[in-house]
Image 1 (cartoon, rainbow, N blue to C red):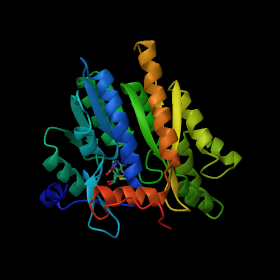
Image 2: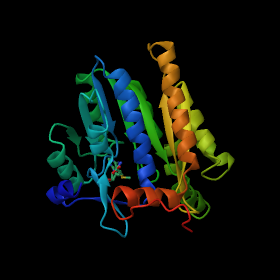
Image 3: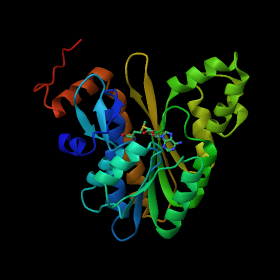
Image 4: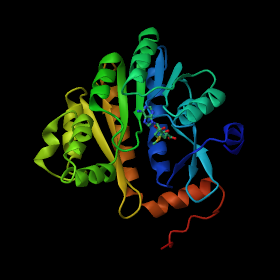
Length: 284
Ligand SMILES: C[S@@+](CC[C@H](N)C(=O)[O-])C[C@H]1O[C@@H](n2cnc3c(N)ncnc32)[C@H](O)[C@@H]1O
């Protein structure tokens, strides 16, 4: 990864717990491409792609970001196309350098970027795996609804209760902060009350209007920080047993990820980056 980073000098700063979302994405990419990639067109769509490389905060370690992972994780069948949306011009340029075969859309995914993505998907018809890893509340629910309608897709979304709590805390002083919340949930029903964790149910129920199966995996960061990766799939004309196996394997991943705490995530990372040779279960 170091060599890739040397080519662009662009990396997105993340905490060690980011490896868990990438692990889940990589795992699902493998299931998805194994089953759907046999004969059809399959697109990988990253709504908030970043520069392709992540750097662990406070260290020099660089790891694959979501677009590179999508390109490299498939074992048998690769994605036919990668569509990568990224608003930051330097990051978009970095993506063009390291993933020259992909379509990079350097516009706001809630505005012009969505129109460009629509054009792209209309000319690359098939199945799509959509990954939405926004910063906070950057993904409007209206955008998600349009994407559900655009393509036959499964969607993985990063839901961040901490960011929601920050905005919820501001609403009393600044009623204008209600607008981003309503855009995010696609309904004013969040006003009924609850914190970011309690509102996960509302968010999932909104998604359930468009997808048959919705599973949320909790990823523990620090003691005070965690996030959820939500998988939303629709029933399609697969063999029934295949569909069942597909959802079951994500459930198994959920059970495993939810047992991992932040210290274990950090240890995994230190092992894969070579800074720790042994897994120390006794770490405080
Ligand atoms: C959390 S990072 C994505 C990290 C990436 N998934 C990874 O694994 O490395 C979110 C990215 O979305 C970009 N972004 C923020 N708002 C956006 C928008 N409205 N449209 C497109 N990209 C946006 C940011 O510049 C940032 O690079």
